[in-house]
Length: 418
Image 1 (cartoon, rainbow, N blue to C red):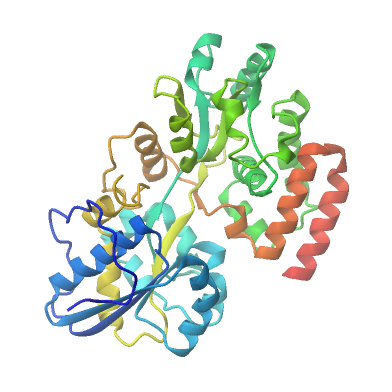
Image 2 (image 1 turned 120 degrees about the vertical axis):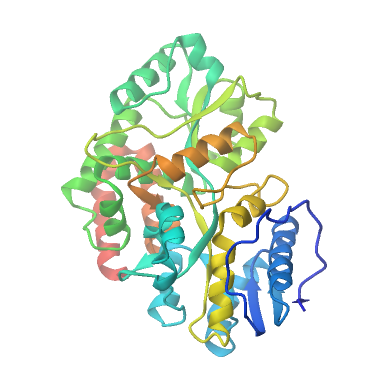
């Protein structure tokens, strides 16, 4: 029988999977799950997951504890060390590294060797891999890309750019019309990280980007300079709104909503406020960040939330069964629906709500991002390095002539931090 040691659930219409996924059937004992899904809709999703899994296994007692998200971040190391649950929420890539390095997460490479998981979750395997092994499974992510004013593009006779030259040509036409190409608010720095991620991955690819964020490449490397050279082409054109360092990402939205800027490189969470401000589907569309080097496979930013088995878990058989359950196609379809998490399932055999942006994002991530899925700069790099680098990105966007000083500072930081 399930036990919840969380606040009262808020019900949402989370449909039960049409077909129960294949899981081990003779589970017994207790399965303890710790989760940071504390906001109302995610909490309801987590409680429904626990309840449904419990119902599939009459001899298993599922105990779920939901902890406030910010408190969870400060408590996770303690509970993984002292009194670990059998399953715990967390995040992919560098965010899981401290717990992998400390021996606190279980190696679940055996799950990733199963054909259904290996094939359907392939886009995120790199994000769950450290030291050649996999340490968790994904249950949701969301796309990044270029959201643009379709009506402005139509007015100017522009098409979605497929390559760097078309990207810049479109931008020049937009500038000639009296608009800016891109809105952005860099007051809180991380939005500039999105631009660096895409420019670096399109210039050199996912593996190079990961090597840089892992501290394996000097910031003074000529390849890093090539990424900034591509960025400077846009800066020198005047592609970005003025005084972007004064705006948060939300405060930069009106430039696009009012038609003063034609596009926004952003995560899918920006769609709701743009629609709420009055942009209809005939005005708003999405495209994948274009190719810079045709020899470089396309990689994307798609921050991924994950489940892990603590190495000290008592019921690892049931924990593995739960991980298989949560990555199955029907379950991922249900938990990511619009009345649940409202994000994208990772399983390529899942389906998404009838939403233009989600459908495009799902198609892009599941079949058109062969180069890998990054987690965003401030998840892929250690916190101190990420903060210093994103400060440098913002400075570069305002004062591009400072590049040598910026890269020298970042290289000093790399040598110290790593």
